[in-house]
Every structure is written in C-alpha cells, then in structure tokens.
Amino acid sequence: MAERTAQLKTGQKVALWATAVTLLISVLKGAVGTLFHSKVLVADALHSAADTVAIFASAFGLWLASREKSRRFPYGLYKAETLVTLIIGALIIWAGIELLLDGYQKLFFVPPPIRFPVFPVAVSGLSIAAAFFIARKEKQTGKAINSQSLLANAGQSMLDIVSSIVVLFGILMAYWQIFYVEGVIIILISLLILKLGLENTWRSLLVLLDANLDEPLQAQIEQTLLDIPGVKDIEDFKIRRAGPVRMVELKFAANPSISIYQAHNIADEIERQVIQKYTTVESVFVHAEPSQQKKVRAIVPVSEINGLD
Image 1 (cartoon, rainbow, N blue to C red):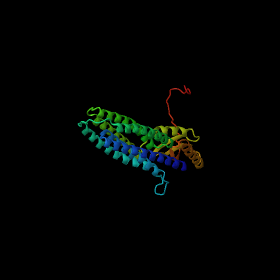
Image 2: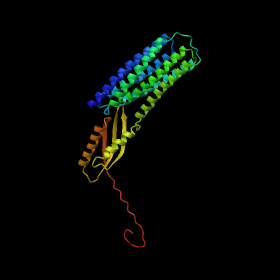
Image 3: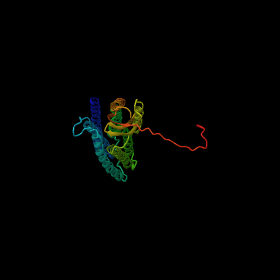
Image 4: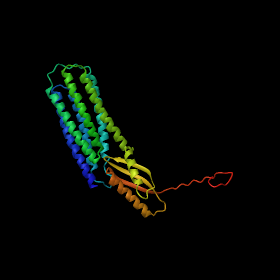
C-alpha cells in the first residue's frame, strides 16, 4: 500500500509539472497571438488551455487516489481520477464547439498585410519543443505507475506537436496572404480539441460503468492461476478499473473432497501470486467452489455381445 501511494504521488508531481509548463506555454501563445493579431496562435492557445485543464485533472485525481482508505470509502478514492476526467472532458467538448464556430466565421475573413511574424513563429517553435519533453516524461511516468490518465495525456502531448506544426504552417500561410487558411486551421484545431474531449468522456464513462477494458490482462491472470496446484478451473472472473489500479474478483473450482483449510490456502496463494506478478492489481477477492465432475452414460443396443466390437 505504501509503495502504491508513493507511485501515485510521483505521478501527481509529474502531472503538476506538466500542468505548469503547459499553462505557461498557453499564456505565452495567447499573449503573443493577441498582440500580433494571430488568430491561429490564439486558437492554439485555447487548445493548450484545454490540455492544461486535462493534465491538472490527472494531478487532482492522482492526489485524491493517494488518500488513505477510510470507513466511509473502504475501496479508496481511486475513481476520483476518472470522475474528474469525465467532468473535464465535457468542458473540453464545449470549448471545441465554440472554437469550431469561430473557425467557420474566419473562413470568410481576409487577413490584412502584416510584417513577418517573428514572435508567433518563435512561440510556435517553443511550443513544439515543450510538447515533446512533456510527452516523453508523461509516458515514462505513466508506464512506471500505470496511470491511464498520464498515458492519455502523453498521447495528447504528441498530438500537440502535430498541432503546433500545423499552427506554425498557418502563421506562415497568413503572412503570405493565402486566404481562408486561418479559418481552416482553426477548424482543424477545434476538431482536435473535440477529439480529446470525446475520448476522455467516453473512456471515463466506460470505467465508471465497470466495463471490462482489460481482456488481455484477464487472459494472462487466468493462465497463471490454472498453473497453481489445486485449481481445477476459473469461473466468474471480473476486473474492475479504479483509476490507476485494478480490482479482481473470481471463483475457482477445487476438488470437492479437500478441507476448508486447504481451499483457504489455495485462495491465499491465488491472491499472493496475482498481486505479486501483476503490479496494477490492488486487491483480489477469491471464492472457492467445488468442481463438478460430470459423467455421461450411454446405452447402445447391439445384435451380439462381442465386447468392444
């Protein structure tokens, strides 16, 4: 439990660091875009602001998940991360729709002649570099502590690199007086924001509804348990996600002639092996059932009794 709490706190620190950097980049892009009349850069600033909120949601969720279990919350607060992600996903969808409408209006806007946008280009380049380092750190930490929200944010940070490159291209196109490009790129950014919001919302809903999202893990655990002496079969296997951890419930079939004490020892061994081999599993509930041996008898009429012939 202490190790799990330490891992959650590590993830929380990384998420807070990523939040601060992304927020700084968002403010910088917004300020430069406003001062130099770059609507594309302002739209990208809103995209980064949506990412900031999503990353902060991960940090907040990991902080709640690291709280100790209590009498009121005996299973812990692991799902707080999922709940916060769901709420933030809905807000991001709203922001994406607003930006999409703004991009549509910009399709009919002809940009005035401007000087070469040195600062907007520099900020876009800085945004690309920052997104790369954030994505790498989030991915490393997310894999280490198995935080789905950090891994999701790492994927989104990689998407930000592509988005910033497109924005840089749009800034240059606006400078070269290519019409409609600003509106098109704003629409593309709004679609990326909508994608982020929809993915976060849908994934969070599935987790909160206890959907089975870990079929490969389930198959691995079942194979491990069938190798344990005394386990005849695995029945009614369930995996429930709760933030960065998994909770497993299962029934195993054992020889009906063994004692309760022996069945209890097998259950303990199942719990020990699952938690030891699969670090993402936080708890295992095991129930023993007597195996049902089925025998089938068939009567075949024959003309002569000639043994097996």
